[in-house]
Image (cartoon, rainbow, N blue to C red; front, side, top):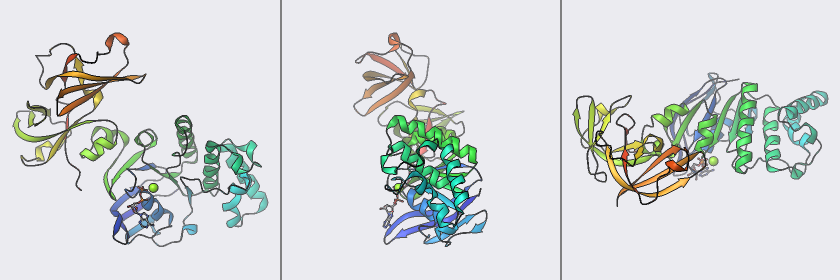
Length: 366
Ligand code: ADP
Ligand code: MG
């Protein structure tokens, strides 16, 4: 087990800055996820930790030991690649044993360690099977076993589930978490899938254009996104540009060109007091926080009237899209409470945004 400490690392490829001034401390035994869209620098960061790339600036440390330019084979990290990178014409045994052969481990011990790890990933009966004759999910388990068998200090996984179908992906998520907890191994997981990040991680770093935008627990990042990029990338949200109007006792009032009437926001755990009238701000409200009613709700603040433009049934939940005007359609999500509670498309409804559920955030910088 090991901590991983990146201090202001930058990686340039010619004119492209793939990673910029990244600071990060990953704790022992932590499941840490790099999340972000394609091309934002996740793989490059992982490769600097594995030693396949050296940073242009900055330092990589494991347990406070400088590893910045230590070659990959001397770092004791186990890596699982997106395309598995297995040897297709070798058997499961030969693939998993590969890293132990390189380390000159005895035949008897190699046999025992390979058998043990294959039990852990539930592939013990496939030990002599050729890898090309395995399913995608089984190949994924071989790749995991191969990374784990060397007893790495750090496990690095680069989009390991993206080639699997949805159901298998779900199953493998649980499987990877189980193994990570069993081994107690410091794990860094790369994904562009927000559901994977939210369900698996102790902490997440959200990347955009080589910059870390926010780091925190899944609940922190979902409930308190720092800018519009994070709010939109993690989960669904309703975003709309606003400007600060005034403070009125405990409540801040914002103006919106699209929503027309003022929006009241209660300042709980937010930085609103530091905003100015000329800041470019957005309100963000999660669909599950929006209340929809076929009554008028005259006694409440932050109520708009709109027309139901679409009702999407997903099984467990129901999404209702409400067109407020030409510029803005809001999305509200509720648990499925049975057919009598679904709104009809075309119906006129009231939409309530509770003032303590609205988050006001700046736009992400380019
Ligand atoms: P991600 O894994 O988040 O999709 P990458 O880390 O692979 O992103 O890439 C980040 C940026 O760096 C991209 O713009 C990519 O084109 C560029 N890049 C990555 N690897 C190389 C390389 N070996 N040479 C040149 N540019 C690269
Ligand atoms: Mg990548």
